[in-house]
Length: 272
Image (cartoon, rainbow, N blue to C red; front, side, top):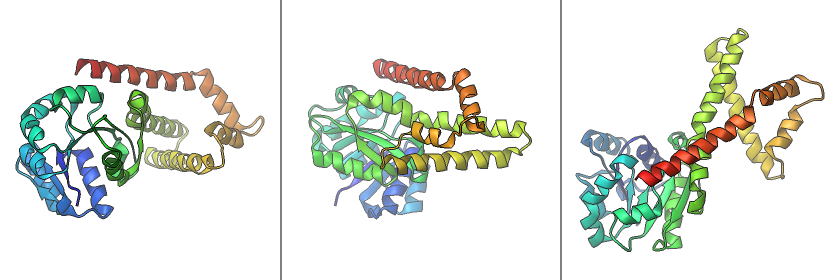
């Protein structure tokens, strides 16, 4: 049976491990460790997965090693496990933002199969969106196993690495833009007298339902613009609001947000 070990037991690692267990993975095939031993022990106690004493133990006992650490500590963690990686040669999976396969290969022993993943925060509720890309040493079967792991917490797709900055902007940073939009809708309703908690509920459900409708109607070839037209009656309230939003720079603001995120992602990759 394939085993996955997680170096790092934070929110994202916890979400992935919980999703894998929910999807039917034997908890004994999952192992976790963390710089804070209590974090790994808590996750193990909750799910029945193995709490491992050290990063080296993860490398020595698992087929896949998931580096679930922040980009700024990735180099130190890689240096710590470089020797056991060279000896045991597991597949290394990284979820660190902005860290390209080329950068990762420079931190790790030569010839390793490396799979880069960009997940998003919605994995915490099983509605994540993840992009997956393997290096030249990773087989289709190994990449497929990683896709299957991340599909347990939402959707996961194989994506060329050249598209990762755009994916990061839309899928990984995008939730923050959506949260801000929901808050803006709620504040607008609050301005008109709707209590804020109720306004947030109304706005969030509206965004949730709209997203589901986009995905459902996409199968029939409908675009988001088509659906916006469907809601917009001639001379009605919706088209008045849409025109006001565009006059205030709504669409250009979204594009600028994505462009800025892509630029920063590339900066972080260059600095690593």
